[in-house]
Length: 251
Image (cartoon, rainbow, N blue to C red; front, top):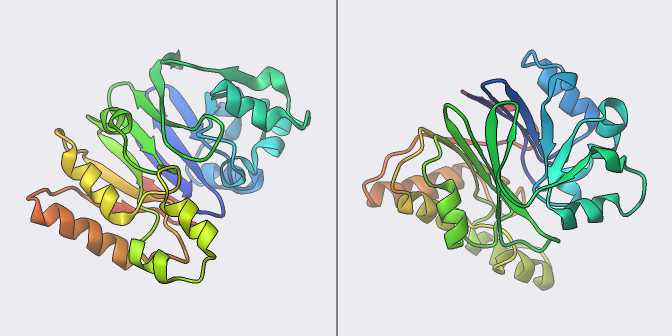
């Protein structure tokens, strides 16, 4: 299994997963040009992608999708409500859209969406299983039992660690935005991400902490907070931090 977080954060998100014969892009929230160049740096041609999985319709997850589909006509998989939101403008090729409600097979791997609490039409995380298991859960207001069950057993996990609660509360954001982020349909705090890892019965081989806020978080603070909780609970898991501006490769 190879995973490349091409970008992660409020300005745009895209993750590449290669497992067995499947080459999958999760979200297309950065420009098609950046997606293409990021994949090319890994020796991957966009035309070889098996498909695109979308978590939800917010711009930082779909900004590059229109250009990408115009150029390459890739199959796109997500919930019906998400696809309807994205296709409402009539500017996207609907024949590329595939609504999914349960697990399906793509290029020899099993792919399963799972519901996440976020303020979007019908947002999901994704679980991909072949010889190994991968899970992604970002834009998560809180870790529900369904989310916790979905990430359980993942060999590699991309998990949101968006903000430090105290930084957010004392920061410059207007209160309505703070309230949205802190709500159970907002974003996951560093400490909450750590406790989700503690609750996992089978520890992942690698965890990527993703969707870090540039305003309400710091890489060193994320690392310190999560490692401190893990250490106090006697848990050791290798951690990697995703970046908004640079691709991060994990294999």
